[in-house]
Amino acid sequence: MSLQLPTDRLLIREWELGDADAALSVYGAEEVTHWLTPEWHPVTDIRAMRSVLHAWIEAGPNLLPPAGRWAIVRKEDGELVGGLALRLLPPFEEDFELSWAVRPDLWGQGYATEASQAIISWAFSQGIEEVFAVARPNNERAISVARRLGMEWVGETEKYYDMRLQVFRQRPG
Image (cartoon, rainbow, N blue to C red):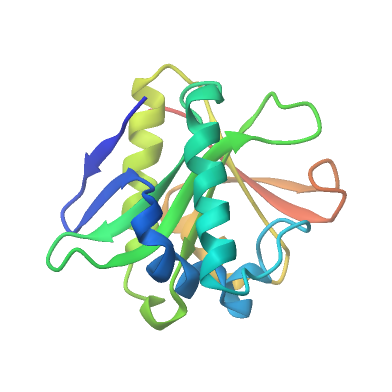
């Protein structure tokens, strides 16, 4: 399913191979990737970033809707500011996890919150009943975004990714 979801300042859209240079400034940054899932490591060069984007683009049609990975682009100048993902959480793949990543030089401008609000609303319109976000206990930025989104703190668990995580949940209404 192709998605073009506008917000006040942003456009959430499908990834394109031409995004590789800009995506590398997000997924190649240690200060971003340090907080992602344990198997994730910084992407080291443009060729590797193209491979990652290619894998995401190819996998998209095979994901259980409304799962996906999208680019976050600033409307005013078309600049890529980050990415979003909505996917099933391991190990049981029953719960949808929302994750976000924003270029470090753009942190603190509300892009993660604005884009995440739009994806959550869209996901609920697609029929899912709840969305989760997980964060390492010392990831204050992610925890703050989850709170700004109005997500409810559920508790701490080691169920996902075999590590201790804070769990937040949002349901429609």
